[in-house]
Structures are given as structure tokens and as C-alpha cells.
Amino acid sequence: MPPFIEPSKRQDSAYRWVILAMVTLSGFLVMGFPTTGLSALFSEIAESLDLSLVDIGVIWGVGSLMGIFTALVGGSLIDQFGTRRTLVVLCLATGVFGASRGFAFDFWSLFLSSFFFGMVQPILPMNFVKLNREWFRSRQLGFASGVMSAGFATGLMLGSRLSATVLSPLLGGWRAVLVFLGLCAILLAVLWALVHPPVERRRGRRPDLRKIIGNYRYVARFRELWVIALAVFGVLGLMRGLGGYVPTYLREIGWDAANADTAMTVFFFCSLIGVVPISHFSDRLGNRRLVMAFGTSMMSIGCALMYLVGDSFWGVMLAMAIGGFCFDSFMALKGAATTEVEGLELALVGSALGFVGMLQNIGSSFIPPLGNALSTNELNAPFLLWAASGAFATLVLLSYRRRKLK
Image 1 (tube, one colour):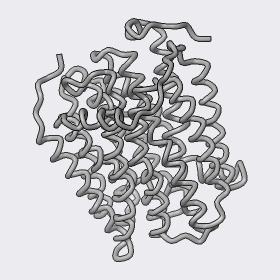
Image 2 (spheres, one colour):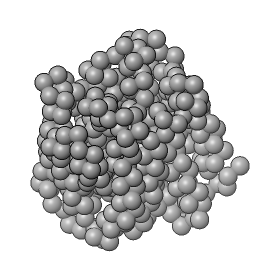
Image 3 (cartoon, helix red, strand yellow):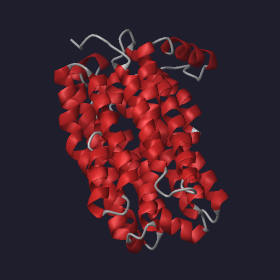
């Protein structure tokens, strides 16, 4: 059993590095790899289940649709029940629902399994972010968030590269890959139960709808939180659209599977390179939103280039490199900035993360299929919509001014 560490002493304990290692591993196995792994498998899934590009866009977006509502409830439940219990339950549920997608036999069965998967998976990053805030001081929070996002980025990069070309042939098809990833999430639920330090039991803790509503009415008063949430709305719409569409788009314009998967691998490899130094730089600069705005600008430029470069191999790789360089650092700083909203109590950090998660999942649910619908006119037209989504995020971030962190 792990040692009992009082909450007031966690930020000075060496055990915080164990927690950060677990958060990073979880980001890799439960969030990063399964996300792009699914998009890389879409061509194989579409052929097996006879899905159109619009169908694929709906499946890609529905994973976040239920998260619009569960993020709100989940954020408050994290505050109420603590990170240990919620992590174990959510990893277990993510594994079960994620594996169930491997048994889909048509569009609607895949839609429903993806819908339930999307109920639970979007809550997990909020747990990870709150854990970092509990275990790290502000002067190290950007660095810790960057390391956490490096796990996400590594998973995103390898998922796009290995799922279709390595794991699918090795395990016997896309169904076996999704089941395998689900089992990994279940294993992590067991690890979190063993590794997370125990906490004092609080009796009589039951979900209270009035308290949940009250918490969200309170955190919604923070204008700074709205700025972060709207920026995340734009960026996650861009990223989910790009990540779900690019592998299939490149195959449609004549690329082979290996090169098509390489494009998103470059996106996430560049993101992995940039995530820790950019996140750590925000600690030094003391202005996370300015660094985030730089990242959203880079993502918009990358999307716009995808519209312009056509089937040019090096043009696509350049667009992916520019678009990807700041993505995971943006996600790391989004979480850190949310927990540091001026005047926000640590006890309500989960609710604040749930509020941001709601806007994040709205963007993830509606912007990708909206972009995919434009592909019926021109295959590259979706990139313009997603570039505009990133530009919106940049403008929102630059509209707010706050004093530097102390």
C-alpha cells in the first residue's frame, strides 16, 4: 500500500513524482493512444461497416457529445469524492465501454458504444489536472502539466502511427485493437487503486444536485474561466476535426496508408517536442494565456496550409508540423490556467474543470462533423472551418488581461 500523505504536505513530498509518472502513463494509455488509434482505424472500420465520410465524422464527434453533460457532473463529483475513487471507477468504465466498440456490427452499434465511451473518458483529464494541482506548487505546475501532456502527445503520436499499420495486422483487425486498448484502461484502474495514497473516508457523501448546480453557478461568475473555456471550445473543435479527418482525407486523395498515417504522426511528434519546454516557459513568463494564444495561432496556420498544399507530401508535413507544435502545450496550460483562476478555491477546481470540459466537448462534438459535411463540396474545405475555429480561440485569449503570476 502507498503511504498516507496529508494533503497539506503533498506538494513537498517526493511521492509527487510517482503520481506524475502515473498521470503521464494514464494519459498515454487511456487518452492519447486510443484517440488517434481510432482515427487511424477509420478507413478499415468504414470498409468493414460500410460507413461514409459523414458517418465517420459523426462517430468521431459523438465521442464528445455526452461529455458535454458528464463533464459538468463529473467535475463536481471529483470535488466531492476525491481523485482516488473517481480515477479507479472512470478508468474501469472507460475500459469496458472502449472495448465494447470492438463488437460493433453497423453504424448504430458503433454510434452507441462510442456515445457511452464519451460519457466517461472526457472526465479523466480533469482528474489528472486536479491531481497535478494538489501535488505541485504553481512554480512547478507548468512543468508538471507539460510532462503530463507529453504522455498524451506520445500516445497521440504512436496511436496514429501504430494502430492501423502494426497493431491491427498483429492482433487480427480493428476490433481486436479496440478491445486491447480497453483492457489497458482496466489494468490502469487496478494500478490507481494500488498507487494513489489513501484518503480519509468521508461518510454520507452522496451526489447532491443542488450543490452541484450551486458550484457551477459560482464558478461561472469568473470571466477568466469563460475566456479559457471558449478558447478550448475552438481548439478542441480544430484538433478533433483534424485528427479524425486527415488520415482518411489523405487516403481519399491517393496517399497510401503508411504516408497517410505519417502526417498525424508528424503532428503529434512536433507537439511532443514542444510540450515540456513551452509549458515550462509559461512558468517563467508568468502569463499562460499569451503562450496559449501563440499556440492557437500556430494551429490555425497549420490548418490553413492544409487547405492550400493539396497532395504535396512536404507541404502536408510542413502544415502538420506547424499545426502540431503547440497543441499539447496548449492543453497542458489550459488545465494549469483553469486551476489558477484568481479567486478560485482548490475545493472547487473540479467544478471549474467540468465547466471548461463542457465547452470543450461542445466544440469536439459539433465542429468536426460540421467540417466533414463541407467535404461533399471540396475534400479540403473542412480545413478552412477548423482554421477559423483556431483563430476564434486566439482572439478570445487576447481579449483578456490579467496581472502576472507571482
